[in-house]
Image (cartoon, rainbow, N blue to C red):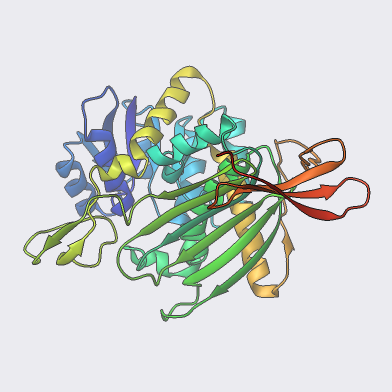
Length: 398
């Protein structure tokens, strides 16, 4: 695959590191930036043969098959419009849009142009996430009841993130987009998210947008997705997921505690993304681009183009996430549960909330069983007719 990258900033460099960090058949042929000096430097750093400051020129280049959008949020729609006009497949960084309305336009553009729109949601491709998701699909956790995702760090690198007009919001649109889609995968993408309750506040930074937020996303089948986001967390980048099901649970620490700890007096350099210091006890990450999902993400995206299928994360997913974010902002303002407005829904309709009752015998439901320190087994039972709850102890076998 021959690739053009639109953008020359922080995320563009992460993408380039992933694409060029190993021998593979995909090649970055061109980089676009609005500043010639940045475009030239980026091309030199990654040995990219072409660079441009003209968007239409970049997209019409004969050596380009697919375009990666690594621009600020306010430029995503304009870039997608230009890519659709040029009939180039698109991979767009998160969030897809600043609002669901923008994301819906982008979804319609790729559908009408007959091109692929890949949503670059890297944290849905991390090795731990993919392994845990497969376990859930295999039934290891039973029916998913609750999924929580947390992302917290000291704040973004680029100045435009802190401008509400350019970014579309604060920590929710920047970090919540990850957390919402992670929980949505665990609960099931075919299950409709219906309502959001959200608290958000600006606690530390002199900005118009929120730098802290917590939200609950209610799904049609009764499951709950929870997101926790912050631009005020000190000590690195905290990425954690938790999932609770009827038959088990999962706890994942993706980044801050990885089993790699190091002490330094401070004479070294870069440690890990969002690390605030290079001295003291540090928590490096072995292969950062792989642990954050970039390697698996691009493999899925390019395979999807070649195979004529949709990738695991596509523009439709980005639209759903933006719709949830819209409802989160509405809830943070109103202080109430707010309905999620979905003009486009491609999942199942009217899924009812399932209640699974486990029978102990013909007359009782099983509420809980437990082994005591003595080895005895305790059963908590409910009478199917009277509703009376009782306790039954089974002596240990000696």
